[in-house]
Length: 243
Ligand code: C5P
Image 1 (tube, rainbow, N blue to C red):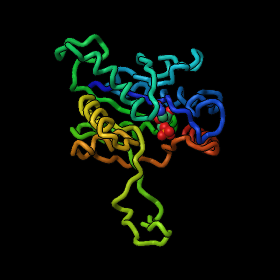
Image 2 (cartoon, rainbow, N blue to C red):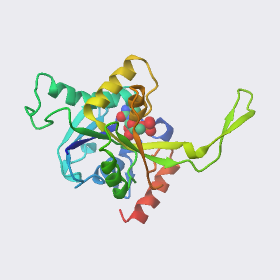
Image 3 (cartoon, rainbow, N blue to C red):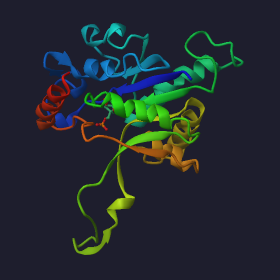
Image 4 (cartoon, helix red, strand yellow):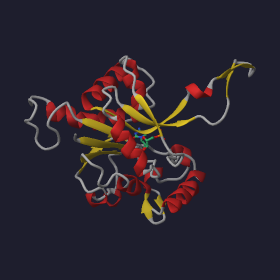
């Protein structure tokens, strides 16, 4: 079926230090955001991109739709990642208002479609992982890319004393992309925000609805650029990938 890519790119990148948000820094001459979008070009069923950026995004930093091969709709971001994602999803909600299925205007034809949310700051995501996530998206509760936990994890008390060891086989790092039916994610984010829940990824909002998204363990290449030293690591990963 058809699906949409929603890219939150409205963060300030405070942990990076510099003036320019990390998603606009250059890696081998190309802005991070452009590399990230290019990873999705040609994937089957991709209908378009909703790109969430800060209002003040300079014109020259707006990526061309040629990069991903489908139209890009730009939307203003919010004060948190969850609010930015909500602003992106509002595009779908607004278009659906008063429309019956099949009456869509090209942006979408109905609530049966899927949305894949991917951080602008993850340019190294591998094609094979995206394809495996698309396969897993047949589960109605959605799916997300994850990574196994490598280190042993300790539970500690307020005094810094170890109170136990968590079985790491039951743990995963939650990465992006994460993929859900549009209607499910809309409902989940709205409800989570209303409840004042801490929403650090889409799946956490969906879990609050009592649903159980599937995990798809990914290659270790899917680094999120967060700190200055991550730029060099990302550059090395991309070079190894031949990007
Ligand atoms: O800050 P963090 O690394 O979790 O950001 C993940 C992604 O969410 C980044 O691509 C960032 O640009 C985006 N974001 C956003 N709006 C915010 C905060 C973060 O779109 N208010």
